[in-house]
Length: 206
Ligand code: ADP
Ligand code: MG
Ligand code: MG
Image 1 (cartoon, helix red, strand yellow):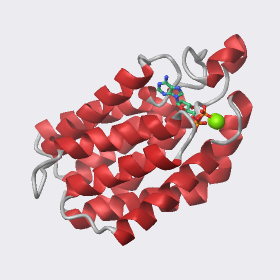
Image 2 (tube, protein in one colour; image 1 turned 90 degrees about the vertical axis):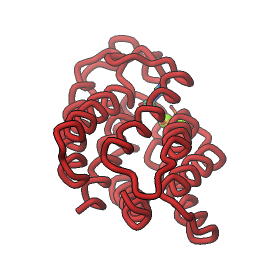
Image 3 (cartoon, helix red, strand yellow; image 1 turned 60 degrees about the vertical axis):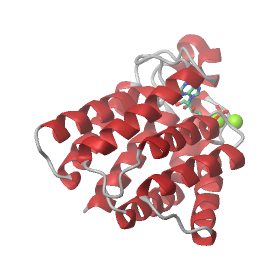
Image 4 (cartoon, protein in one colour; image 1 turned 60 degrees about the horizontal axis):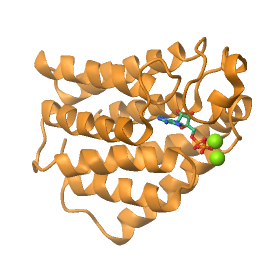
């Protein structure tokens, strides 16, 4: 993943969050507080501005700036969680031209940061339910010698399946957990936005 692709990824996330903002907010209105779309829209608009003002020198810098900006601009649970994901991934992404395996290593470090902060397991009905299978698919594709576009497409498919898998679950983390059984039957908004993030990676990778 070169710097152009890293920038294109973040721009594609911003565009898809803008286009999907109302859907994310609708999902969050069913089992949360109806702000997930606005939270991410505010966050990625600020990320775009930060990257325009302070151009990053490496793919890792792009992700660190993305993460730090999300942490400082988004108040909800998703700001610190996504912020930690991108910041920890960016810190690990020290290569100037990371391979798919390097990206998998970096994003695994990001997922570890999310789990440390939010202590969610797979099955708790959170973004972790989409992130985990996406990163497993990215890793498997990288190990089988796939290039970034193919690896990113595999990750995007796994993330979408992971997001869909949250529908029947009862939430055990975040605001949705306050609803108990009433959280069942709705897709988790954070898992849905994670699927958008990996679709954006596939788009940016080509
Ligand atoms: P808030 O819940 O503070 O309003 P958002 O609506 O922006 O924040 O984000 C909600 C999403 O954050 C949830 O759908 C879920 O995916 C994710 N989330 C919440 N708590 C956790 C946690 N402890 N670990 C992982 N993800 C979480
Ligand atoms: Mg919310
Ligand atoms: Mg909120």
